[in-house]
Image (cartoon, rainbow, N blue to C red; front, side):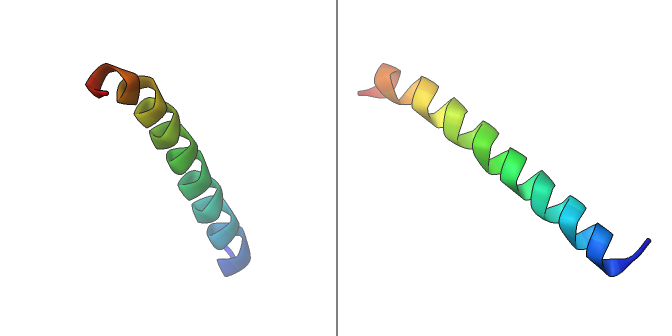
Length: 33
């Protein structure tokens, strides 16, 4: 694998992870507040 493709895949995974985590947080925040 090339470094560029690996970096692109990694950045995409990180972006998806942050998107998922932020959605989960926004979903659970009203319950705690």
